[in-house]
Amino acid sequence: MSALFAFLNSWAGVGATLGELLQYGWRFVKNLFLPRAVLAARVLAAESQLALCQERLERQGVRRHRFSDGFRWLWVLLAGWWSDWPRYVRLMQPATVKRWHEWGFRLFWRGKSSRPPGRPAISLQLRVLIRQMSRENRLWGAERIRDTIALLGFPKLDVETVRKYMVGGGTFRQRSSTWLSFLRNHLQVSWAMDFFTVTTVGFGRLYVLVVLEHGRRRVVHWAITAHPTLTWVIQQLREATAFGLQPHHQFRDNDRIYGLGVAGFLKSCQIGEVRTAYGCPWQNPFVERFVGSVRREVLDHVIVLNEAHLERMLKEYIEEFYHTDRPHQGLEGQVPEPTPRPTQPPSNVRAIPVLGGLHHRYVAVAA
Image 1 (cartoon, helix red, strand yellow):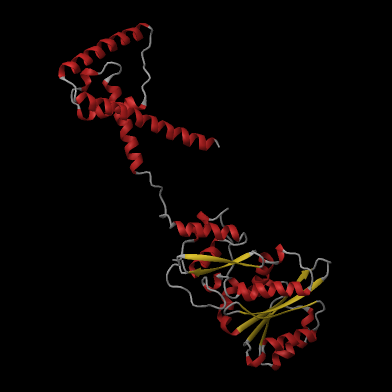
Image 2: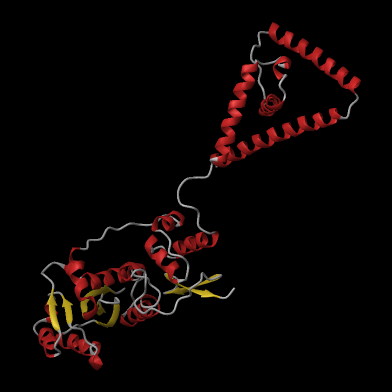
């Protein structure tokens, strides 16, 4: 509130100065049309009264007078075009007027160079869209918003530019690429599988198996059960590799439920098995990243009632958002299942809520 009052006071001062200068200008214009005798009489009357006032002030010990900004600007302008102005200075020294001129010169150049440095501002439509996305999707960072905007057909922005206009700012996470450099050699021919658990409202435990394709980060298969067994896991792998759609390599951890049966099944399907080291989930990063995304973007914000409730939420998240509208950093801002995108920025953007508004899809619509 104090900043608002200071802003209003500064503009009030500027308005008063301009009003005073306009009054001086109006008096000057009126004097141009007065007869010379009348004008000389008025000047004589003003000089006599001014001399009397100055004498009284000196008797009272007042050496410095208080001049308004409008008065200062008037004498700065007079000193600029009237060569004989020092002879008519009475209340101040000519050096004072020159100092005022330097003060006005500094204000003039400060105004000319007032554009803030840095990147040029983006369009108002993009700024509004960035704020809308950051406000509607509290879990999204600057990179996610940048990639989502690029998918809509806008030019790809700088991350710092997006973070500047976000509500609350963005987040920065530094990632390690040591193991990723090894996995990139097998991205297009490898899958990963992993379990994660979900606690229900009644403190029950559900197990979710996820099979993820490395190349496009696409969820090939997922299933939920309250009682996982080796037979159930093998059946899920059969469904994931139906019709000959199988990888060359299958990454997995050393969960006890896999036993020797999973290794035998993969060998019978001529799929190479790649096990991560014990206690090293970071060696299977893509599926671990997916599980983390599910938790951060869905499970941390809802209370799961039962298996049917969890299945409905995961299906909506994976099929209606993750595969089609969630940009991935590892895919250079693309989605696992790309669709044709507009080549020109749209005139209007429509938000479609997902999972009750926890996330949103953005589509270009006609104006």
